Length: 127
Image (cartoon, rainbow, N blue to C red):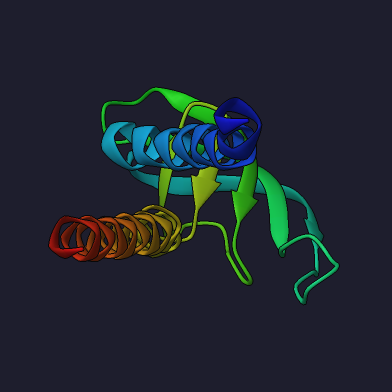
């Protein structure tokens, strides 16, 4: 019974850890780069559409290059972006949101569960 009750929350925690962990890895390994070329841009946004992005290439300060999708509403050749191997964002801000907001909500949920558990333990100890 306990296994069934914990399966869905455990799956959610695993999904959240993988998703936040991937974005945290990007945040830690990314660096500034300059857009070198753009090949195709797609307008997006909203709840059901993918976010706006452009396919392009960029060059890092040490001279090595990257190519892939630049997630941004607007980007132009010569602009500075935050990028890694195969991915890029207009800045590091979207990654900060993708890491800290879910992480904060998860931690707040853990605190709520602990408070409820402590209140339950105190009420059963007094009875």
